[in-house]
Length: 463
Image (tube, rainbow, N blue to C red; front, side, top):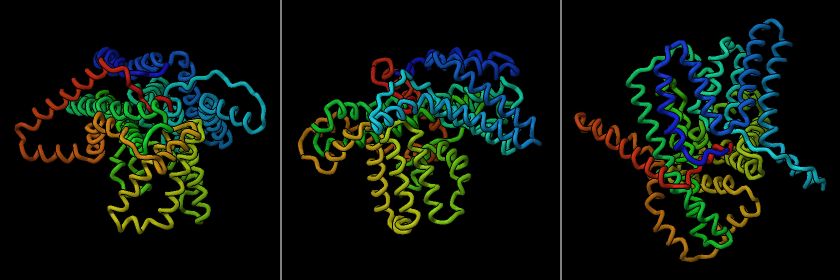
């Protein structure tokens, strides 16, 4: 079952937090584990055994490594158990039909496709648990001996479905000794509301325009409407994913955890290199730590460095989806990262306006690659963007969606933190009441939209 709305959260959270706060400290992780499993089962009860197996396998593997520290062969065996299990589960559910389809196309065979649905969040929690076992193998952390505490880490419901990717080192201390402070809870509530507003009030509205453009058909739209549609998707995917990440960070803070930031206003970047330091930071950190550096990173020859980057970005694209467009999307970033590293980086650094326009154009084209899984239709869309005809169809959509697109562009920059600092400095007496009123307004508008609307996708739930 795919999450089609987040209204379930508003039914689930009051009960969850009430139970969590009422139970004694020694039972909080157990309560969190049970609540998180209930939350997961609401979305995908069929794959509950997969989630339990993931907890058990990585718990056994990590403790096996810890127990046999002096036996390198045994340690490697337990590490391989974790890696093969996690990648095996991810590969089976996410990529089996992709390989069958391509084998059939290449060899002319007729192997039957499997009837599989992707377990919710599998791309995130497999990377999360696998990184933990690798860290235990490297000696960076001690293996968790309490399976309840370890299970709570694996299935923490705020970030279970769509990240951010929380590594064990991020929350190891808080799993054992966390305090619930009123100021942290207030901060968490505010962060959650801001994330909810981003997702519901901006991402959903922008996404509705992109959906309309898809429904019309790329062959039937003008060049301006093609660009308007891609702009809408560019804003949708940012506010959708950054909104969910903020909601997860806020909920984690209410529970006593501090999750890592996942976005840092990537659309203000001046290069693809900078963009990927600001976008989906926990995934970038994961690939850097567990793939790029083990391959040799940049402490190698130029040709080897380019190869390392190729592997990382092909893997990044493939991680996002079992379609060729995702692999092309990853390699598209690879090409420009190499160009910036070895050819045009200095030029971009010297020309602020040109470099920002360059980044915006490349990012919009990359999201066109990302959004359209059918390569034939992708070709049609790109043809419309660069060789299409004029027309007036875009005027109607600009009138209907111009305000929300403008809001998306404005809030893609760090306007809110800048304005908050200015307002706080101007009026210490009325800043907090104004802030509370604004947050309540965002919450009321968001809930009203959720109650009334049927369009409420979460783009990253499918990954």
